[in-house]
Image (cartoon, rainbow, N blue to C red; front, top):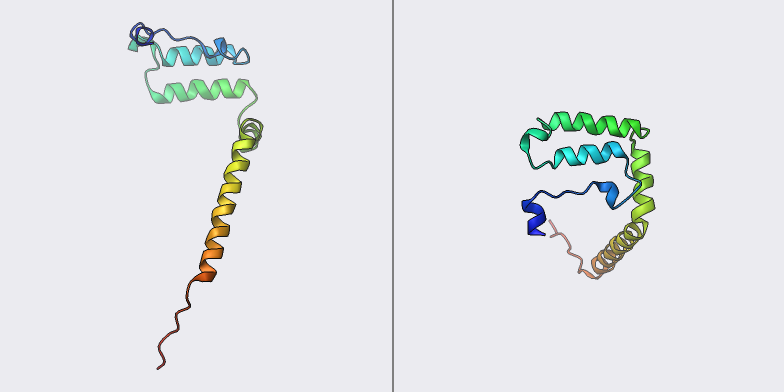
Length: 106
C-alpha cells in the first residue's frame, strides 16, 4: 500500500465500478496526478470540470441526490430515524418524571 502511494498508483474509479463514466475517470486521475503540473491549477478549474461531467450525465438536483441517498442508504437512514425517535421518546418519558417547581408566592 505504501509503495502504491509512493509511486502514485491510482486506478480509475471505473476499475471498481464499471458504471463510472470515462469523463469522471479522467477528472479523478487528473486531480490525483503525482506530478503537480498535471493536476488542476485551481479548485475552481476542478469545480468547472466536475460541473461539466455532471451536466453531461443529466445535471444534478436535490431530487436526484435524495433519490440516490434513498437507493443506497435507506437502511442506514431508517436505523438513524428509529434511534432518534427512541431518544425523543426517552426524553419525553423522563421529563414527565421530573418534579414540578412551583413559583414562590408573592
